[in-house]
Image (tube, rainbow, N blue to C red; front, side):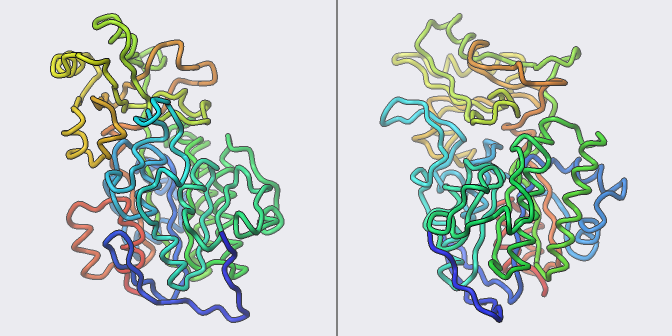
Length: 422
């Protein structure tokens, strides 16, 4: 990855570029797309009603605010990859944070650009003359999103390790004016936004993607004072982006819900254990939410894939799973690939989704819940699929048609580039 060229007078390229069947026509202004990780619309509602987000409230009044549908499973890698490419997981190939590799039989993290099956909007924008920068909170996203990019890409988690040759930039902490934050903090997300502001101020970038982390949403409900303070702090940084003349689009990768029983304890169905009890050992349940950030969710979400041992009666197992209290949807590979827009070779024999307040796991021994405080808040299923969408500018007729239909969170850059009146 190489550093973009710089000049004393910043000229915004308006050259159109096409990637994955979509053509983007960026305006002659800075473009900033923000993914507020884990931002169910209730978080914006709570903060805006309490006047904690004046800048986002102004965006909603002068531009657009609504709901859009994310990609399933409603996980971070899946939706960030879709936003970065403008297409579904069936095209990107990213079906989760974690999967069973059919070639090796190993369970692996899907956090490398080698798993991505299509080009990104960011690399295409850079090739068209834009100064592109990607800033993620989590390091796990950086490599996927920066595939083939001539530009800047770093994470707040490892901001101190950024080097010119590998990240397109060095001395990030000096640029932002403070040390990198702890990934398990509100600061991890605020650092991303502050990095975006600094990159715009220094004219190091004019086409940015800022992807935050959902630590706060996992930990606190929308009405908690901690959440309100966090969203207020985010709003200040978003206001700074607007003051710098940026066209800003806000969305989320997924929502967030409490997954607890009446006593406040995680409400878990350990599917692999249940499968073994009924059909014998040899079946494997994969939790695609699995990632290095166990404090967030204990690797428990509302979407799993199931790999059955040979000669198992798949329709019978599927029907039995669907009868379990807390399971809401069960699909075989072919139907899941079509209905949920997933890559068939990366999802197993069955795909299982659970109720709003239920998570799915493997066995009790596979999930460390000791770090969870105050119960579990998580995501991954149908009930975290709908997310907010806010544009800073009025929408044109083309955009209005899209928003009146079935808009997706991965329409973000098409709508920011093509859909606003500037």
